[in-house]
Image 1 (cartoon, helix red, strand yellow):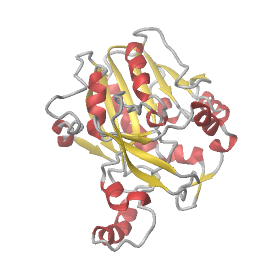
Image 2 (cartoon, helix red, strand yellow; image 1 turned 60 degrees about the horizontal axis):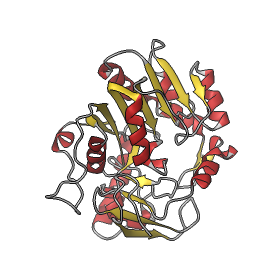
Image 3 (cartoon, one colour; image 1 turned 135 degrees about the vertical axis):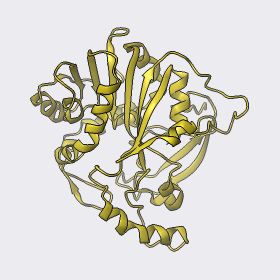
Length: 319
């Protein structure tokens, strides 16, 4: 059986890394494999598209759920609590867009992110869940009840495409990028938020106890993998963020409370089962369509993955 990386689309490059025993919120064992070419981790084998759709379409997805520690989480309150984070993304989009035009958010949820853009933009929220779609509609957004895999737009009809905490849930993210680049005008922007870094400190320290392992995240792409793959589709990364402060789980007080446990874990004396929320667990990217395509494979590094672009490391934005 061909085992294809779902980010870089290379065949027979997946190496099993970690098998989860079913103690996660999902409740079933699953395996994570790493791509030898780009370095992205991914659920192996992937969940079926029908299963993914049924999970996110379920009525309870827009009701109170529970986080890894068992605390109740209201989806509307969680989205509202991220407004500070989303405001930074919206400001970056407004300052970077070359023209006012059509902006589409795929997997828009309640539309909070999209609603922060001025009314002068044509703002389209693509959201399949009926309750979330209704909430987005109440914000005055144009709403399309559709899945990312089924959506289509005319060539060069968008000035910006947003995937707010959505891209890593796609079963075929490589195929999606190949389609999406045609929707954007030259110079158009692509915003991907909430990507999980499997090479960060917490996954390396906690292994199976990393709090964000879950099979509904179909891929876990390190930043370097995203730079490489986006470049191969004609995108140049302009900016990136590590959103910890300003999220519902990040505060200076919580960070200070977690430091003793993390230090114990670094000394091999971990006390907790799950890793804490931590800076660098997730990141977000803003990229521009340039069509200056970068080769996917680098002969000097083939089989090792591509190193993170040092320009990205020099200018991160936290919070």
